Amino acid sequence: MRARTAPAILTLTLTAVLALGGCAASESEATSSQTPAPSSAAEETEEPTLEELPAGSPLTVEDRKALKDVEGVGTYTLAEGSIVLVRADAPLPEVVVNDASVKLAGMGMENEGRIIPPIGADQNLANKLSAESGRNVYVIVHLIPSTPPSDLPTWPVYLTRPFDDQFHDSIEAAKAGAIAHAGGDASTVDFVFVDYVN
Image (cartoon, rainbow, N blue to C red):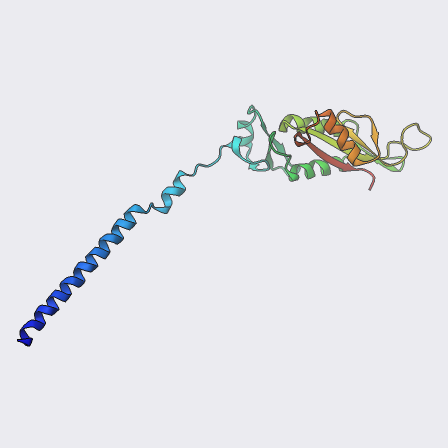
């Protein structure tokens, strides 16, 4: 009697194991079919357009041409030849500010023992950066305007371009004057600083 029931028990056990395995496999298949493939989420992410790129993004010559008439964005060519994006809704990138400062400093000329900027270069650069970026860009120069005897200062002062012929005793006063001239909103103003004294 015992010899006859053992195969039956073994058959029932195997059947139960196979049934459970089938359930687990079908549950696993159902779960995997509900989980989206990782690549599908990545495919939905769109690349930003040229107009949406952040300030300071590198551009090609073709990009510069494409952005020529787009309001609120512009381009700046660094001294080493690469082109970067500038935006009206973002401060000038540090790389642009530094490049413009170095460019102007290199144009300084020695005159009677002091370094002075070439006439109009600071104003021209400020105007060009303002037009290209859509922001209010001012160049603040630190210089000694003249030598004695003179009715101009013969000591270091700050001068703001393009609008101001007033000499300031501090860079803070020069910045405050520029911000007031721009309408009082400091978030729309950028500064390029050039030191012809030190």
